[in-house]
Every structure is written in C-alpha cells, then in structure tokens.
Image 1: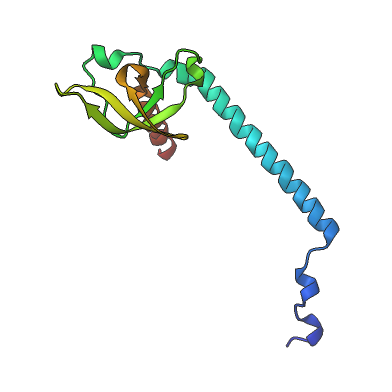
Image 2 (image 1 turned 60 degrees about the vertical axis):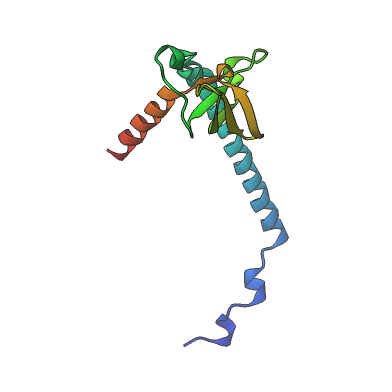
Length: 138
C-alpha cells in the first residue's frame, strides 16, 4: 500500500521563505489592483450616474412622502452633489401637525438627524437596480 517514505511530513506542509515572499507580493498586487478597480468603478458611478438620479425636491411636487428604509443623498452646500454621502432613513420624525420635517439617517459615519429639505430621494436608483437584477436573471 503506502511506504513510510510516502507519508506527509512537516517539511511538506511548510512553505519556504522565498516562495512565501513571492506569494505575499502577488497577493499585495492583487489587493491593490482590486482596490483600484473598486475605487474607479465607484468614482465613475458617482460622476456619471448618481448626479442623474437625484430627484431634487420632486417628492414635494408629486406629493411623494419619504419612507422608512429608503436610500437618500445627504445634501450639503459646500460639496459637489456627486460627493454627497448616501444614507438610509431609519426613522421619520413628524411634527405636531403630522407632517414629517425631520428624518433620522444611518450613514457610514453613524446616525444623523436632518431636515427633509437637505435630503434627496433616489427613487429612480431603486428602479434601475431592479431592472438590472431582472436582466441578469433572464
């Protein structure tokens, strides 16, 4: 069957130092390449697509209410709209008259409470994602 000489030993499992350095260098290059790819795709998405998806105050004109768990852009006067951060509505804070004037948002930095005037809905973004996901399944 098997000879004692054919058994797996510790030396068979250990990686030589020169091979390990080559593997580390290869993995570092792959990680850097992957990060560059992700950064490039995100920059391109923000510059080409995101600006078109902003529904500036159209929800007020159409009577559309902001809903829980909706993805929004957080507007800022001193930053270009393509650099605005994204947030998710986690709580609606209605005033005494029942109209929602403040919302609590979850961002990558934490939670924010902002007036409705400073957030912009991305309704068409969700429609676009749904269309793309249906196209991939078909």
